[in-house]
Image (cartoon, rainbow, N blue to C red; front, side):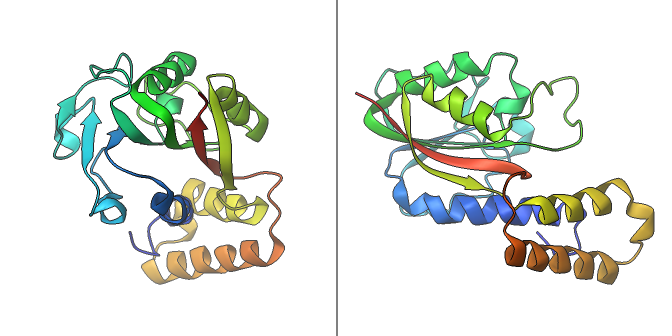
Length: 206
């Protein structure tokens, strides 16, 4: 991840949120929709099982959809699932499967976008406002322990402009300057009524 990337603001804030919450997970961990496994460094001392739909995305232990997961009940202490829920047609079924797989008081670190342009079509179904994401988690047997916005209004504006109007940022220096500027402004203003997305740490209620 480079500061000149067109998606840098979103990627930076997502990684920062996962890094903050990762120490609160215990193994074994199931990484659902792991892709290229960008967060392995945060779990290097914990047993981790990696699953995804597409084997071409990285080194996988299990090839499967997000639901139904071919794993036993109460088989994991933690689940990591980042930016997957927008791609499944029935997210409540996915959450129920997470509940089934987690041990009592097991923890779920999960993220979802509030805004992002269409991607991975045709499998792009949802975006989540804060209350909608909280409802999805809490209505499926979980208690929210931490709930982090990924930036506020200014991070969203900065990301929107550089992503949707790339013709105005032809050089890496311009993109890097723009990205870092809007992240700094966002950190000063901390207007989290609107966000690029949410990262949540939740616990299975027993």
